[in-house]
Amino acid sequence: MKIATKTSIAITTRRTFGRISFDILDSLDTRLLYERYLLNFTNKDYSAVKVLFINLYKLYKIDGYWYNFVMDLFDLQNNAERLAPLAERMRPSTIDEFLGQGRIVGEGSLLRRAISADRLGSCIFYGPPGTGKTTLANIIAESTNANFVKLNAVTSGVADAKKVIEEAKDLLRIYGKRTYLLLDECHRWNKAQSDSVLAAIEQGYIIFIGSTTENPYVSMTRAIVSRCRIFAFSRLSEDDVKRGLERALSDKDKGLGNMNLQVAPDALAHIAWASGGDMRTALNALELACLTTHADDDGVIRVDRDVAEQSVQQKALSVTEDMYYDMISAFIKSMRGSDSSAALYWAERLLEAGCDPMLIARRIMIHACEDVGLADPNAIVVAQSCVSAFEKIGLPEGKIPLAEGIIYVSEAPKSNQVVEALALADNAVKTVKRESVPLYLRDPNFKGKDDAVSGYKYPHNYGGWVEQQYLPDELKDAKFYYPTDNGFEKTIKERQSQRKPQKDK
Image 1 (cartoon, rainbow, N blue to C red):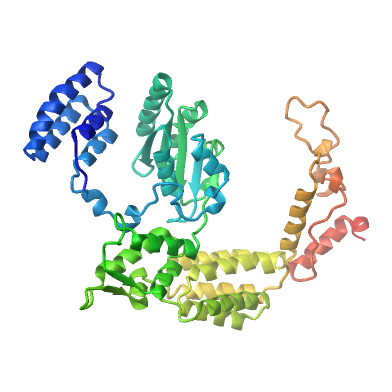
Image 2 (cartoon, rainbow, N blue to C red):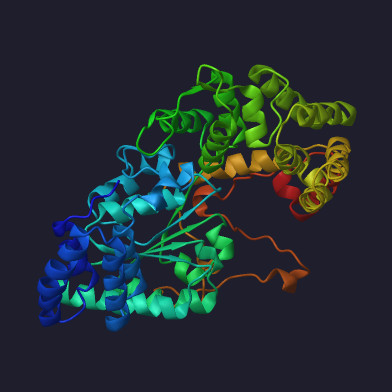
């Protein structure tokens, strides 16, 4: 329970009305705080104290953020936090409590060093739900000495952004204090809204931290993305999710540690698996399981696998973990081996066992590129159409387009030369440290070049193709893509032979 003291009220009052002139602040501090507050608090008339601050809010038109700050103070029973969902209560408050994303915030990582030094620049966190994007943004806000403002892109607009920027300018000029703008669901801002903060980001008035589940390179304007460092979050591992669940079960302040619980290990493991790397989903499922299960005669609330399965709303796998991964492997290799019957069987077996159907869908698209490739360029088109149809239809009818995609990819001619070409190109990039673009391929419009750009042969002037070196001199004889005789790649191979008969022989 929160205990309001004279000191806490004084600190809150100064924070809340800090933008009022010092004469008024002193008056408030002396007359309103020590006289009215002490009188009302002594009489336990908390509502009168609250009304006092509401009237001051209306009189001096303090912004909503500080108004909410004051209202939190009078939540003496701590209702807002006590009644919040478990996932919200268990948000880590320090970088050491943060789970997962070791590549991004692990010891010695760039982001962790920047947070520790309080020198983080504008950045965007994107990735699946429940992976810690908003949590990390909150940790940054709490650990910095700068001012921070939180907005949600769904409910905020240009006017809100301009207000934040004006206040940020005043804080930086007068007090030398920086401002972080934390924008949740940042992909929902349109071009006008995004452009409204560009100048402030460039001039350093605000440090922008956005969080989104959408790929910012696709869903956000290029102007704001180019001014931010992008950090891609990945789904949490089952071990990370399980650690988060165990922490919630043992935490007596924010978690379920005060309940007389007994959660079966296989129930905990199932929630961790079925959450799909989403910590929010896992914690909400655990809370639902614990709060809706009646205690036994001995007063113990026992959560078993059946309860966990109902709470997470996903059927438990009717196979062992090893067999689950073996069946995924069998499904993958059946498609690669052009056995559509086997691929359909293993896909259906996985779905019946409780496998996420999107795993099947993703594998269809991957194999359309990895194992079919240009032997049948339509494979990825068909695969993507089938997956899109499944997403719109859902189960059970959605199995039909999935089956169509599986059969098409399985029966299509096979070639992995796209993957092989990519590997060779990647190796070349990592091997050649210094390369130069041939002079005749350089941009002739770029000013300041020492040499005149000339000698480029425009292929259409030569019937569509002309012999010409496009690779740097260090790789001039390199070749990455070797088409096979399978499917459409045979046509590609013939075209290559017609274009460069001497070089390919």
